[in-house]
Image (cartoon, rainbow, N blue to C red; front, side, top):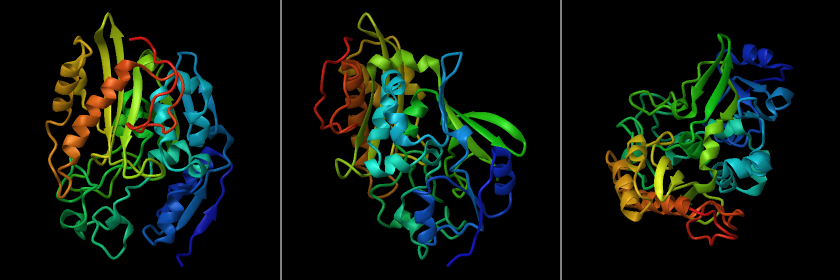
Length: 352
């Protein structure tokens, strides 16, 4: 049993001071952290319980039209928030496709952003894993790696980011608010997570003691609300992490694409934003040919990291499918199986 201190701060400032000590970790709902502790994957010397800080538990409409979501807002509460579901439907669809209802009721926004990879070798302390113990190697390179990265990977690590929620956040230019000993700062969600390179143990840009306090959805993302979808292929139609996922959003005028947003999940150590594919779509007719070219561009740099070559055509087809679904329009009601490409779409679609 790993002995650790338990601290329950009364404010964000107290939490940051406590978490700035070596070996400290923030604890919210613990849906990922406690599993890692039980498996002896991580051994924090101090848990800083932030679960009762009221200033982190709010969804606010800001004066500039942005929506600010506190780090302790529950995934289920955010997904079912009427304004969020209406204005940012791909975000709601992604949240409702993640985990089980019980976990969504407990898991928090901040925790979702920082959840660790589900690579089996990371979870097995007897395996070599540079992410868990730098310099030991990567057993996934020559092991069971059919679920691993095809973009942005290195010889040091081929793990993927497991988050559904982060994928539409990256697509629609969400911003992460951070506080630490040096004060407050903001980073684009797209820049929060790091590719492995030679330092896969460093997964985000957060410095020791820094805390995610909120995520902001920009007002401009509302322009995609009528044509936004999140699709996810998984080994089971529910309660499973994405093999590949795609968030897609379009602004359409007179049958042509004025703006496009695209992000992929399950293919890299971070949500993958293929801006070159977005640029190709702008000004093009919203048709299958344009969607195919965008998928080609999005995956131009993809290469297998083992037994996962199938992921590349799978991601290509899912990009096309997601863009087609976005073009058809956001469903008036959430599908019975959110994000599943096999689920029938209820209600009336928005007009293109």
